Image (spheres, rainbow, N blue to C red):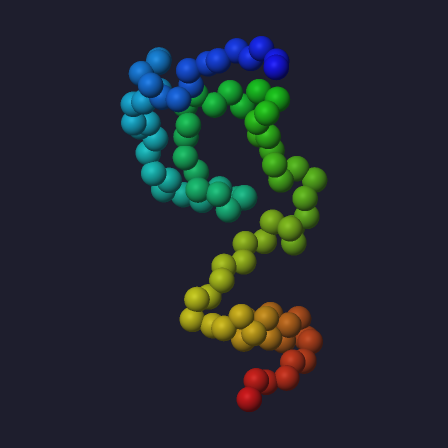
Length: 92
């Protein structure tokens, strides 16, 4: 069995990990569609953090498409296809 190092990152009082975070709710939406919230201890230069996740993407890939809960799935698809000039058959 391999020897492993145990760490106490479970929020048991070590360095205040069990305290409530004081991150304010978002008041605006980022162009990516994500709510903008400032998390003060995130190191944006860290290799595990992607500071530009939309780099190299297209306008179509970044288009925000909100679902309309008042429409059925088939109705929403038919409307999207019709908007692109594709005829669809109406449900009976």
